[in-house]
Length: 248
Image (cartoon, rainbow, N blue to C red; front, side, top):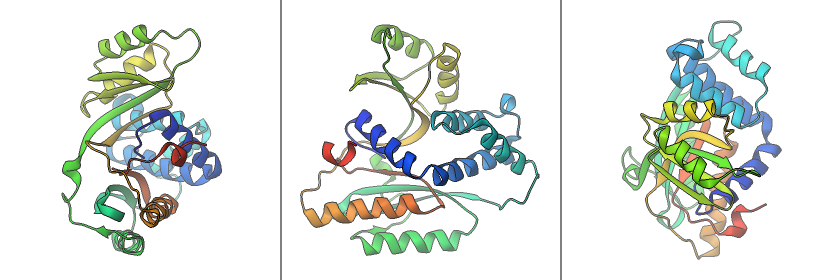
């Protein structure tokens, strides 16, 4: 999710994760399986898998659950063929929405998404209709803990290849190019940093405020429906969510 307060957004996501941990682990498990199938089950030689494992750990996914996903990808147990697809559309009042999916049935997920967008005041568009409103970036978020010096973290991040660094609400945000994300994340991991979030995202270039109560309700419902769909991995949007909407 995108919001103007990164820490508030994290707290909102963490709350949702606590309520739906099983569903989240299922989705991350799919990412692990796809990464392992594409590049092999050895993270030492598969950077995409290393990134997926880092995401799993950032979300407190148990090691044995991670290993089960890797075994499935290696042929131990039945596994479906999942295809990665990104869908683009408009939510209420023209809010741009990007939806990343992993599905074993393209017709099903396309139909589901079209239904959600139509029902809640938006429409599913063609590839490229809103993509230009986002930048593709690696985003690493680190919670500032006692004794953690901002200047030191910034220098470590820049030395590791970060493109930008900022601090807000007790969170350090480190951004990278998609190409340098893995190397930067691994360098910081090597220095002992733990991540609240570490993944490549679509970052909105500008945000859209919603003032109409019906639009706000529909946007909330659209996000909820998308999050509840097992085939949906990530949702990015340009809605400038108010603080009261994202804080726990």
